[in-house]
Length: 124
Image (cartoon, rainbow, N blue to C red; front, side, top):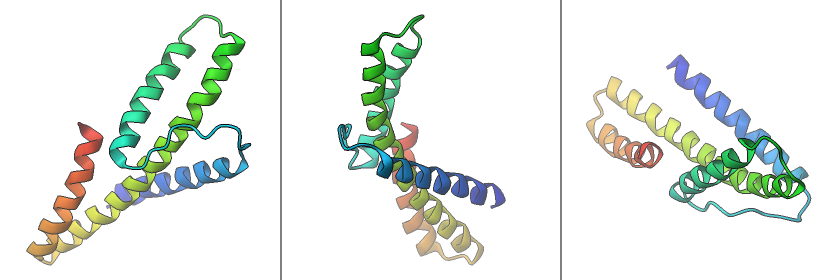
């Protein structure tokens, strides 16, 4: 479980950093919202691909820089939602782990299903 605790710590710290950065930004561009984990994963993939296309160029124009600036808002929104979801997943998985130690079948099944629903979104 030590690896899980480390992973959760990293996610919490990155979520805090994202939240701190979000409060320091000017209010001029909000980015695309990620209301669900599914939306976040889709936005993260789509906007990372756009960012990858731009940063792969030999030279970046002012327009490219402006586009990167706007893309990062959506990527940050998606990452914040993903971090939020993975924190919940870590709690669910720990509950499954503890329940398995005490042979609590009901909790293993219910929390395990909840964990797997979110995990499926991340890995599909």
